[in-house]
Length: 172
Image (cartoon, rainbow, N blue to C red; front, top):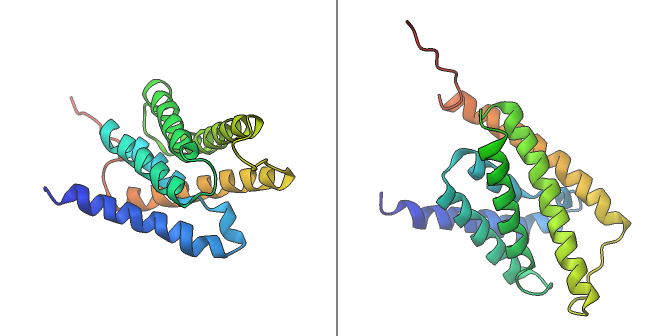
């Protein structure tokens, strides 16, 4: 039990390294954001502390490998986490397939909008040379589609393996 957190962070770091170093070399990989999928799954399945740890660790690792000013990814993932947690607690409370899909849709949209706002503000004050072009919007739409697709696959796998999503009927 006490080796669970270190093993979890090693696993998450390996997924981050896989996305940053391996998937970044392929053209189609720009549409994949595995970290966002993991963040949405953790918000959906895990408790607040674990989900917060995933968002902060992911943002920190992405910031270390990013040429953008430090903190953009950390802020984007943390703010996305807070908004997703709010949506899950107040609107998508039944933890169904549709809840996960809409949470993934909102998660990808919120993450990209927060990232665009933060990087745009930093560009305006002269802190960065990054300014999104028209191709960024195709990336944005592609990541929304692939995030929803990967979440649907993950939900079906978890549904087959676990009884966590099965309805439970109480008898009289």
